[in-house]
Amino acid sequence: MENTIEHIIAVIEPKHQDETVRNKGRETLVDFIAGSLGGIANVYVGQSLDTVKVKMQTFPDIHKNMVSCFVETFRKEGIRGLYAGTTPALVANIAENSVLFGFYGVCQKLVLKFTNQKRVEELNPLGNAVAGSLAAFFCSFTLCPTELVKCRLQAQMETEAMKQKDNPRVKIGPLKMTESILKTEGIRGLFHGLSATVAREMPGYFVLFGGMEVTKHLLTPPGKTKEEIGPVKTVVAGGMGGICFWTFIFPFDVVKSRMQVAGSGGGIFPVLMKIFRNEGILALYNGLGPTLVRTFPATGALILTYETTKKYMNEAIDTL
Image (tube, rainbow, N blue to C red; front, side, top):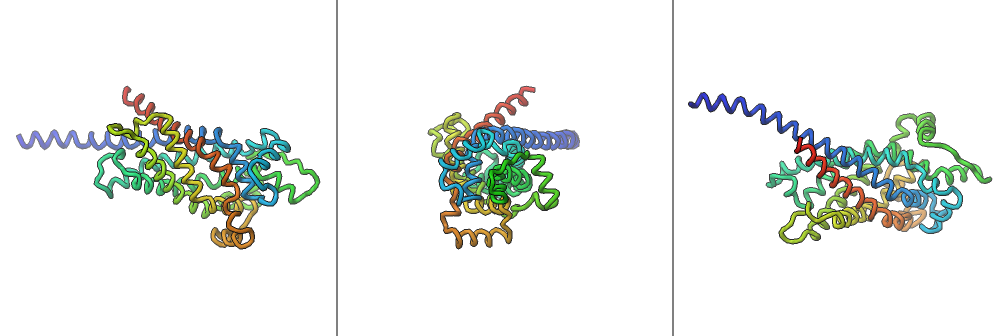
């Protein structure tokens, strides 16, 4: 009898282990796809104000406030100017968010090993914040090159104007910009500002996921789970997470933009201190206004798209 039971266990256990591996692979793939679609939603909702943010950060002497920057860009460059860099922004956001959310699920399970919880859904806001921060490290390597191209495309009119004063007309797309960077700076040029990107992303996503999860907790009625709060509250939670993210890390984003567009070198903290000494502390928050206006709906759309896609994909796979 004992031999029979041992035989049955020996047959079942490998199958159970294979099934566990398949489930983990499926969950990561679903997170990857859902994150990609969330990244697309994020770009189309917020790209025009992201252009305004980059211009204000990089050329504070030219653009004094959000409204004048928006109007001046529209007047001189049209709607295409406001959506300059959309292609690399899409590539950046799809790459960033697919890797971010793919690793987010993996890192949540890693955090579970150090807590008493059995399921990801039981993680508290701190646990989710730590998982988000760890996942952000990996997505920084996909984000840096594409965001560098995006920032240079967004600021190319001002960059060329500083070189030639007489009404510059710049016509260059993402492929030409990438080719130009590789030709003049090599492959390392595409990773200019990587240290600032990591310094921005890891603490930034800690406060984003932490702020989002706290908001979800506060918006969840008694007797329900945070997965049942509905689309409007999900957008609000995502938007609040986005506001926490940008408010906390904005000085590092200014430094990153300067390093990538203006070629400011010497490391994160020397550039940060140079801006602080020469331009004052407010320069480190130049462009925060359009960023906060943009991030609430954009991050809300990102989180709603991610969670909705994940829900329906899992339901579809479960029926197979």
